[in-house]
Each structure stands twice: as structure tokens, then as C-alpha cells.
Amino acid sequence: MMKKKLVLIRDIGNYEGREVTLAGWVYNRRSSGKVRFVLLRDGTGIIQCVFSEKDVAPDIFELSDRIPQESSVYVKGVVRKDLRAPGGYELVASNMEVIQIAEDYPITPKEHGIEFLMKYRHLWLRSRRQHAIILIRARLIRAIRDYFDNQGFILVDTPILTPAAVEGTTTLFEVDYFGMKTYLTQSGQLYNEPNAAAFNKVYCFGPTFRAEKSKTRRHLTEFWMVEPEVAFADLEDIMDLAEDFLCYIVARVLSECQEQFKVLERDITKLEAVKKPFPRLTYTEAVKKLNEHGNPTKWGDDFGGDEETILSSLYDRPLMITHYPAQCKAFYMKRDPNDENLALGVDVLAPEGYGEIIGGGEREDDLKTLEKRIMEHKLPREAFEWYLDTRRYGTFPHSGFGLGVERTVAWLCGLSHVRETIPYPRMLEKIYP
RNA sequence: UCCAGCGUAGCUCAAUGGUGGAGCAUCCGGCUGUUAACCGGAGGGUUGCAGGUUCGAGUCCUGCCGCUGGAGCCA
Image 1 (cartoon, chains in turn purple, brown):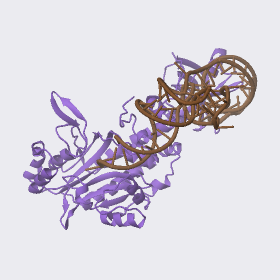
Image 2 (cartoon, rainbow, N blue to C red; image 1 turned 90 degrees about the vertical axis):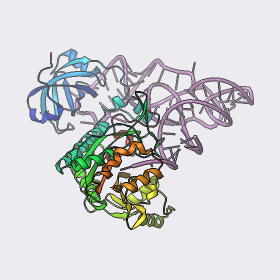
Image 3 (cartoon, rainbow, N blue to C red; image 1 turned 135 degrees about the horizontal axis):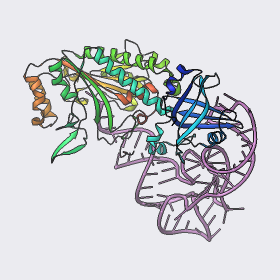
Image 4 (tube, protein in one colour; image 1 turned 180 degrees about the horizontal axis):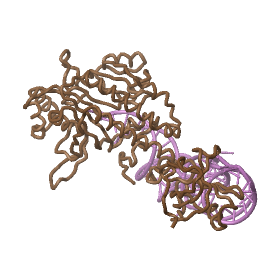
């Protein structure tokens, strides 16, 4: 009955002095004798509703002292500006109607362990902190789309069910496809390349799946990746793109999510430092730096978490590392014409020890060479014939990269683990809720 | 798969081999501006499971299960 012309808490500033009805959930409550405070949350914000004995009926006054956490309610009242209230406004309540009394909400206003919170992930999302992280994720994704759309890229979606591995070495999730063995995609990359021949500048954006038994703060088995691919671009072009792209998305999220960064107590001066130019090192130079800092990595070793942390901590902005040993990289990566042992690839490491957020490079565009690589990697040639057509019919130099959304959100938010950066994380042997 | 740590009230944690406690949550009461409000009171336990050592095990030993962190792996 009170459900008429509902106002969102986000917009409450437009209704100062007026009577409004809010709908939401009880976030917390406090009382002080003759005044009761109910914190109401509606998913767009939180506002304190003040219940005074003189303003409301006795049963409503009693209810305001009893209503349990996360009960769903309508509250009617007058919006008042008040400096004592967080957010600047509070609601002087005149009435409250219960939709449902919530009994024994598991997540109390108190510290909880990660195991418990992950079990109640669907409820945990209601908390201030998780709300802020997921909102930043949404704004980041919007900024990513805007960037590519505004730069002349066409969104060309790539399939999630695929007939073969992109990289044979990785473990894939197998799916039974009407009796046929297929796999969940681990990258849109191979499809992006013919798409670039059709549309010039393309990107795909979707979930990817890795059945790796990785149990670290940087790994999920299901994660989101945006992958641009540019026709006639070389390694340097794609590095310039990655640099410009990162500066744009960081600036956009910074300007749109001030409030959320405050909730997370994120030191945003660290993000404000993300400006061109980014430092660029070759793999060989990076190994030298590591050795200077006491890390025993030898030329030819791939970098692990420790190495990425040391290197990225040396700079206040993202670090680009190029020219890795070809043996560390995928079959489709073009070799350096000046040194066959090196790949024309680039990894971008986020600052503050967050590690790799972008991987990419120039693609091998010669048919013969690519056929050889597929053989060397012991990949099923038949599954790649369509891909090889890109090299048969008007082959062209092209480059691209992939950005991991969750690792980027973790960096932006200053989180120690990627599991909080996606609403429902899928991790090693963890798929509930 | 390997290494390490942990498993005690709904939650977060205490408890020298000798009668299992506290804070929060819940319930009862108090307080006219609280900010994870506060103050007083009450209820709440197969100490992950199975075995062993001991007069006596939450505590020591063995196995199993689960969780957390890390490694390997990994655009």
C-alpha cells in the first residue's frame, strides 16, 4: 500500500524537505531510548531513517527497535539535510511497512573469515565493500567498451564452445557436444584474427575458462577478458594502444568511482600516477634487473609471481616487458626477425606488485612458419585449417592483446585476491554458490 | 600434485596435559542523536571425524576429512 512513487536513495538529494517512500533492506539499527535509527539499504545507497516517539504510531516505534537485519521494508518520511548523517541526508520517518521479517541473517556486522563469506557470497554482495568492488568492475567494463567503440573497433564476439585448444599445453574444460569432444574457450584470440581481416579493428569481450589447478590469489577458472586485434599493426603499435587504453580506463574509473574508492580506503594517488609514457624493458633487460635485486632468474626462465612482483614494484606505473624467449610463448606469436629465439610479445605488469594484467603481441603471418609451429607444438593440424586460411588468402601483419578484467579490478581496488572482483568466483574445486 | 598453518558457541577468537571462556549475534531490560552506539542480565558446546598414549586429552601421537596461504602450473 505504501508502494507508490518509490525514490532511490542515490537520488535522495533531489527531494530535500519533501515526503518520499523508500523501499529496501535494514542494513543495521541503533537505538537511544526515545530515538531509533534504522539504516536502510536499497542497492543504490544507504540512508539513516530516524524514528522518534512523537512522529510515529506506537506499534511502528516498537517495530523500529525490533526489525531484524536485512528485513525488507517500505519507509515513508521527510528528507532532511543533516551533517551528522553519513551521506549528508537522513529520513525523518513517519511510517514503515514490513514486506518480510528476515530471521537470523548470517552475516552480522562483525568480522568474518573468508571461508564463511564465500559460502554466503550471494549475501556478502549486499555489504558496502563488496558493493563498491562490483560497481567499480561495472564501471571499468563500461570504460573498456567505450574506449574500443570510440576508437573505431567493432565488437565481434567469439565462440565459447570451441573444437580445439588455443594452446595445447593448457588444461581445458571438456564439454560433451552431442557426443563430440569440445572445450570451453581459453581465449578469443584465434577467432579475432580472421575477424580482423573482415573488420580491420575488432575486439571480443567475454568469459574464458582455464582448468588449471592453480591455487593462488591471481587465478580463477572462469574469468573475463577483453581482446582487441588490429590489422596491419606491429608490436610497437599494439604497445602504444595498450598504453593509451590503460590510461583511459584508469582515468575513467577514477573520475566515476570516487565514493567507492573511499569505501575501499584505496590510496588513489597510486592510480593517478598512471600516465604516459610507461616504462618498457626487454625480457633480457628485465632478467638483468632481477639479478641486480638478488633474484636468481636465469635467461630462458619464465617469470613467476615473485619475479613479476619485484619488477612491477620498481615503477609507479604499468611496466611493459617485451621480447620474451620464444619457448615461453604461444605458437602463433611472431619471432623477432633480428633474433629467432625471441618472440614479438609484450606483457604489461600492473604496479604495486599486482603482476600481469595484459599479454599480447604480433602474430605470425607466414603460412609455412605457422604450419611448422603447429607441428612443433604437436597440435592437431586439422582443427586449425580455418585459422590457417587467414594466412592463405591475403595474409597481413596484425597484432593484439588480452586484458584480464579481474586482475585489473584487483589492482584498481587494491585487493589482495581476485576472488572478490567477480560476483561469483569459480576457483579450484569451488563452484558454490 | 607438493609444502606450511589452521579446525573450540551462529560468527571472530581465548583456554600450561587437570572444572571449556570472551566479544559480536539472539532473547529480556535501560538510555532523547546513535555512527560496527553504549550499559545490565539470560540462553547457547558430541572442541571436524576415527583410533591411540595417559589416572586424566580441546591440548600429545597416527590416519582421514575440510579450510586457508604458498609453490608448481598458468598470456
